[in-house]
Length: 120
Image (cartoon, rainbow, N blue to C red):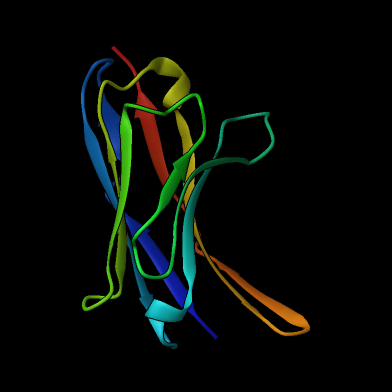
């Protein structure tokens, strides 16, 4: 079982920056691929960014590519999302997800989310 707690959300103006963190506990963090998702009001949850368990590869949604950066620190059991040049459409609840695939099974855990609001 993995417990995930997001932090760092808040109110930011368009063009501003925010850094989200997700702290993990309860399992070997370095075994898990970590992702960030977001959900805007009235919309489905959508993928934002993913980082491999070793932190050697990342991928992003087209809508955030070049503006957001995902990183992880396996020694501190944390994954971060640096958000720059933020836009109104970045508003939403941001969730981190831990995923591990073993033969015949996949484990997934979600945090409870942190709210990000982009407003002038």
